[in-house]
Length: 177
Image 1: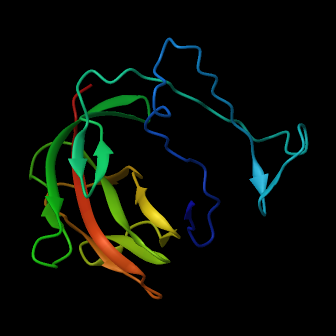
Image 2 (image 1 turned 120 degrees about the horizontal axis):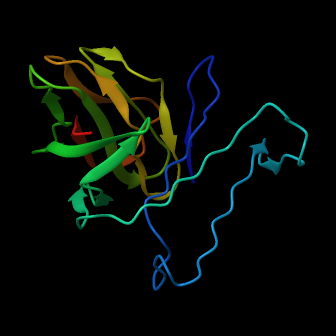
Image 3 (image 1 turned 135 degrees about the horizontal axis):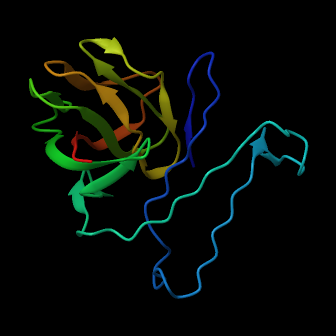
């Protein structure tokens, strides 16, 4: 289970980056979306002002491994195309950190794998960028795309309680279209 909590803001997206094993685009896969509240499905029409969006894309290049998770080399965000520009991963136990180049427009994405209840935050210039991201169980989470400015330093900060962190990584995407 992966959840994201942002104090004072509802979570409005849940990225899914692949198909189940043995399935691929064109094999008759059905994609479904719905709203939940407290783990229960919200009845159709109960929230008439909510709009859901879905995009299905065929990757133009194979994904790269970042902290044990597949990270796409191209990403769509806010109707624009972004291309993977840089990666940073845990090294000798140190959490990843990267500095945004001085020219261009960029997004940063995170990838974290571990066990137990992990709470972490992306930080930009030492300040929390988006609130805590929490995942429970075994596996990985992340993938949020957050705009960053040239020259900023991006890192991951662990919160409490902290389960066992296996790997963490940051991906920097540059605007191409």
